[in-house]
Length: 426
View 1 (cartoon, rainbow, N blue to C red):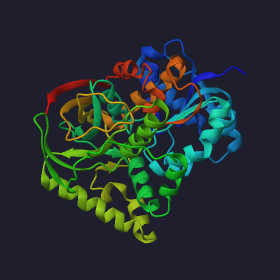
View 2 (cartoon, rainbow, N blue to C red):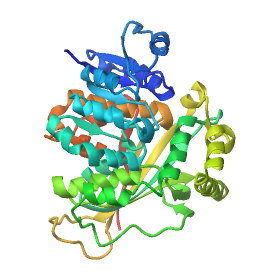
View 3 (cartoon, rainbow, N blue to C red):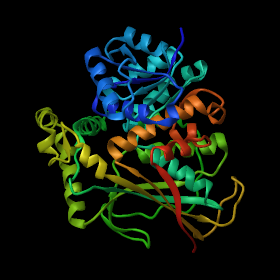
């Protein structure tokens, strides 16, 4: 049986439909075959008609595969027809594992847009060996969470001209006059993640998937309060810890760098940049209340049933409007500190860092346009750039899988670019 180059699973969902649209519109996918997959043929056909109208390219006759996360047989049948499965169905802790299992056991690589560290790391724990045996690649967090961050650190390490020791990153989300609201699916994932944090037993999982002790630099990232003022030449505002998956993904990439690539691992802290202290306090207070209310079944049901009201309309069942997405953009800042001198891996630098390099990743709407571009770029790397991937299949982070590939070029084709902003001697 011949395989489609890409199968987009969950193509009729809010994000999945955008993935299909940007795939069809991308010159990078010319000459590649694709299919859409999901539970409802009617909805999938409607997506293809809508994409045809928006792009001016008739894909209404594209292949449709019927697959359901609760039906193992249908997932196996889908995976047998794919070289790469793009899985856009979340929350992944509820619906993701069956798709990974089907892909690995049926010879398909798998990329997704999960931002759920517990699920992601459990997939590595359970399927790394089988993926290696089958020669396929499983790469999670291929959306905006966490390609800009993980490949941003990789970019900074490659362009530091010395030994990078630690990085502080800042997410800056920019919106237009129309404002912005994320789709409620992201909110539901957040609720499930907060609820499961106490029982996920991530510590035990991490000991299994990262058994070796790695040595980072003696100078660590400065300790910051929960809310603090950014005073950089390139960036101001206030910062709070970033609650996404970026830090956990980057830490796994650093483990891979140290144990497989034999390059120096770094310390990392991730923050979100806000415009004012007042807004920072509101966000922190909201997350604190969520963390409390998800513990109780009654209040958790209310949170899940009324995402618009309970998130103060930061999230909506309807998601952002087309106008809101067109106006939105992001800048991901990386402030890297290290040493001009390059030492062997087994030697530690002494004293404070003497070099600082600032880099950015910039792109369009983070939630859906950039996420589509990111996951499609990951799929392109798997299809078109196999020679620059790890030699063996397995479960990888984005930087581990794609750090030496042409993914930066693929990302640029979707408007997601990396650049150096400034360099200093300290």
